[in-house]
Image 1: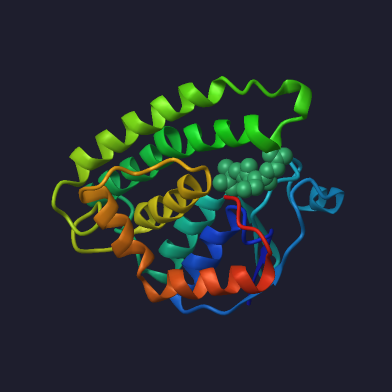
Image 2: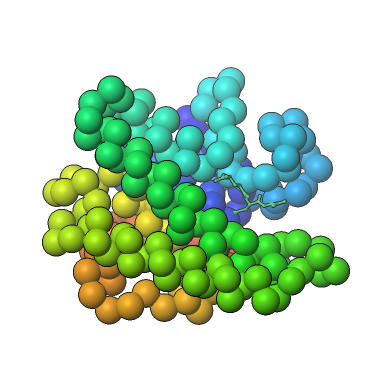
Length: 205
Ligand SMILES: N[C@@H](CCC(=O)N[C@@H](CS)C(=O)NCC(=O)O)C(=O)O
């Protein structure tokens, strides 16, 4: 049995969504980021953390890829050229899309107030828009970034689109909007949204 640590309004959502995609049951421990008791599993006091038996894994992308590999779904096998392209999209999701959202969020609510620089958010939005233009070109007319098969980076883009919506950053109409709608119509996504609503009051990221 798996246990996800972290509120579902955080990146813990990704892990719950992945487990729902895989049809795996899990327990949920909604310990908040920076709770001192997280020190036992993550010295950074960040979430999510996944407990798998006696092991704990930190970092949502590593967790999602591990689960996909372990259950042999939503991923191409390691060492294949398709996996190289898939991992390239995963890295792009984190470096180009998530980074702009995360820095903007830090300067909105996560950093101590005296360290926030509101104008940084304009630069983040510029980077976000550039990343979406690139995603639109790379996606082309495919259903998912790797073609017909939904894989780990699609799940990340689906989560990041929700984060962008909560940040009030628009995704321009076109192939990326259609792609996000396709991803967010998946039963496992909707199931996870319901679970989040049942366990949280406000979804912020
Ligand atoms: N790369 C990590 C980032 C984890 C992270 O920053 N999580 C946020 C919540 S979504 C957190 O715990 N923030 C607390 C902090 O920044 O101190 C992952 O993807 O899991």
